[in-house]
Each structure stands twice: as structure tokens, then as C-alpha cells.
Amino acid sequence: MVETAGGGPGDGTAEVLDRPLPDGVRRRVVQIVSDGFGGLTVAELPAQLRQYARFTPTRRAKFAGNAMAAALETDPLFRQRIGEKLREAQPELAGALDSGSPPPAADPLDVAAAAYVLRPTGWVKLVTAAGEEAQRADAERADEENRAELERLREELDRAREQTRIDTERLRAELDAARKEADSLHRKLRAAHSDVKRGEAALRKRQGEIEAVRTEAQAQVSAAESETRRLKARLSEAEAALEATRRAAREGRSVEDMRVRLLLDTLLDATQGLRRELALPPVSVRPAETVDAVEPGRMTPKDIAARALSENDPAILDQLLALPQAHLLVDGYNVTKTGYPQMPLEKQRLRLLGQLSQLAAQTGAEVTCVFDGAELAAPVLLAPPRGVRVLFSKPGVTADELIRQIVRAEPPGRPVIVASTDREVADGVAKAGARPVASAMLLKRLS
Image 1: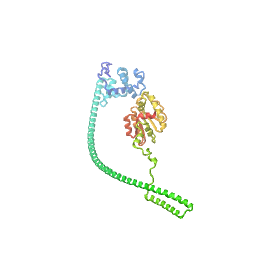
Image 2: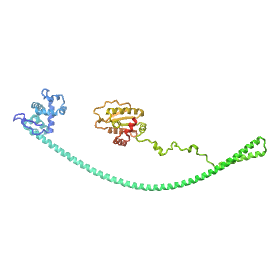
Image 3: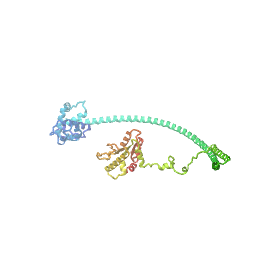
Image 4: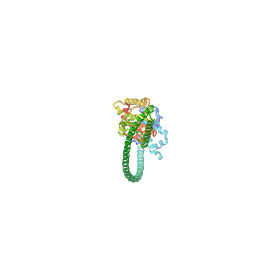
């Protein structure tokens, strides 16, 4: 702001400020104008300032500062009226300026601002001196701040060096401990290998003994079967003799036939005694057990792997949502831009929320869908569907950050599932205890 001559040679208004008004002086000038503004009628105000007549001084200084400074510079009558209000408010300072001896204890910026408004003789020197004083004070303050910052940085450097030394010593100690532990593990591993070899040798020995016992048992079973067949033949003969004896008894045969019956009973008793003596085992294998099939609980690892779920199988999501108190968090735009990016954002949101509402009704799980508020030009008027909580991130906060905040807010141990393809989001929520799933899996489940 540069003032041009506007008075006679004996008036301070003839003096010219050949440099821009210092910022500190300018702020004080605007404050003086704002304070004196309220004491003027609307008719006494310049046309460009009348719209600010009802503003408070603080609000007026904030919104009309440039306009008031320009009017003060270009309108001598307005400057004269503001000067009169200043004389009424600060008569001692105005009188001192008129006499050419400003108060030594007064703030140089206040003196310069008052001189700029009142325009006493020598006001340009006062304004220039105030600007130089302000610049010198700013330079000293900046120098002091730089020295303090340098000292702080030096202290931080010393602390960092000390911390580095401590960390280095700790890491060396941990490395030595790890090396000792590795040596110990190597020794234990070698001992374990030796134990395994001895165990394998003992196992082979036991297997040989079992095979010998099995061969001997098979031989005994063969001998017992031969003896059983022989006894069965004798039993058949005895039964036939018994039947003949019965017929003879019925026909009144002689006592000799009764003696044959007694011999038959003796043979039967001998047969029972032989069965007990041989101790023949009961039959343990049934015909149905010889057929090759898979029984429950006896599936091979290959069968189990064939029946395992794929990482992209939506059935995994159903199993997770079936857990008690499960909470599904959905990265909204990440899912919609993966599944149907060609649609407008509004239709993407409506389609996804409708599908999530059906999923919530089917599973009974808590469902929260998070959208990035930075994608919006204005607040969204949206009625969330039943069973789905809809959240938008605040300005300056991304949807990813909001999802991580929600995961951290959940109690440890609650099953929380986060649907997002963003690797940074997946890694962050996994560290917090949640289970990340791909957006493609959720889209498959919804379709």
C-alpha cells in the first residue's frame, strides 16, 4: 500500500511512503479502521464498505480488511473520519504524535499505525522505522528459533546415536544367543537322527518277529483246521451211529447197541475238549470287509485334499459367516469396482447394498459396508437396507483407515471378516486379528 500526496506542504499528508506498508503495521491499521467503523453512520461510509456496516469488529477485520485498507488509502475524507475516532479512543497517543514526540514505551507498531491514519509530520519515518523494527524483531526471533531447533536436533542426534549403540549391542547379544541356540538345536537334531535310526532298526526287528509269529500261527491254524475236518468226519460217523442206535433202541435192540451210544457220547466230549485245548480264535474277518471301499474316518490324505475347499470357494465365506457373532466388513467401492466398474457410483452402491441385505438375511451375521467419502461431491441421502450398516469416511479419512478403525474397535476373539482386494487393507486387518477375503469371493457368493 503506497500513499500519494494529498495535502499542502505543511501537512503530513504531503509525505509519500516509498515502500509497501509492513504487514504488522497494516494489521494494526485495519484494526483501527474496524474499531472506528462502528461509530460512523452508513452515509459516512464509502460505498464499497456499506455492506459491512452490520459486521462485528472482528468479523469486519477478517472479511473486509482489504476493502477498508484500500478506502483508507484512496478516500481522504474517510481517513479523516477514522482519524477523529482514533483521537477520541486514544487521545494521549494522538496528542503525542501531533507534538512530534511519540511515547517511548508505546508499541512501535501501534505508533506507526496511528501515524499512518493521522498523517502527522514525519509519519513516513515512523512507519518505516516500525517496519524495520518489526523485521529486526522477526529476524531475531527466527534466529532464536533456528538456534533452538539446531540444539534440539543435536540432542535428538545424540539420543539417536546412543539408541543405535544400545540397539547394536542388544542385537549382537541376540545374535550370539541365536547362534548358541542353533548349535544346541543341531546337536539335538543329530541325536534325534540317531534315535530314529535305532528306532527303525528295532521296528524292523519287531516286524520280523511278528512275521515269524504270524507264520507259526498260520501253521497252527492249518493244523487245527485239518484236525477239525477229521473230527467233523468222525462226528458225522458218530451221528450216523447215534441215529442207528436210536433206531435200534426203538426197535428193542440188544445192550451192545447201547454201548455204541456210550462210545458216541465219549467222542463228542473228546471233541469239545480238543476245541478248548487248541483254543481256536473266533472268526474276525467277514466277507463284506474284503471289498475295497472307503469307510468313514479312514479317508486317505489324497481323498481329504480332493474334498478340501479352494481359497476362492464361496463356501469358505459361508463357513466364516456361520461362526457365532460373525461381523462382515465390506470395502464398498473396492468390491463394486471389481464386479461392475462400468456402472455409475450411485447404482454401484444400490446394487451392492441390495445384495448384502439378502446375505445378512440368509446368514444372520452383522454386515457393515464402508464407502470412501472422498469419492462424493456432496453428502449422500441414502436409506440403508435392512440388516446392513452403511458408513462413509469423513473428509481427510480414507475408507481403508475407517475399516482398520472398526477392526481395532472389535473385542479380541470376535470373528471379523473383511472383504477387500486391497493388499494393504488385508495385511492391516490380518495383523489386528480379522480374516481378509478377496472381493471376488464375496461377489461369487452374492451372485
